[in-house]
Length: 81
Image (cartoon, rainbow, N blue to C red; front, side):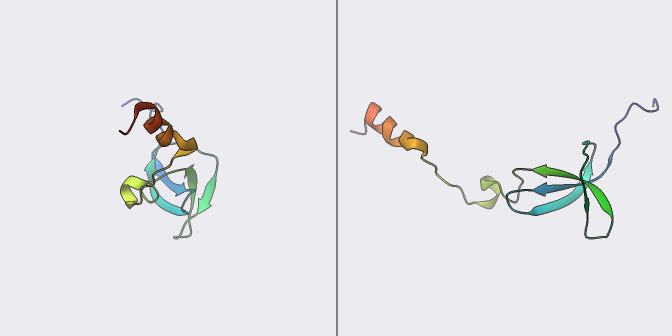
């Protein structure tokens, strides 16, 4: 293999901002932030909005959001007769 063409594959911590859940895995993603992990070592940190810990599909806590009465507007327009 050619030297210096592959990205650096290293341990990285992904932190879910919506649930304060974090997990350590390996990735090539580039980041400037770091975090001290449970084992005492410092790892690069990637902040994510949704992970399997907070996503409704995985948690089973799906929410129905009626933003601005869209469902009622649809029912009035196309009729629930």
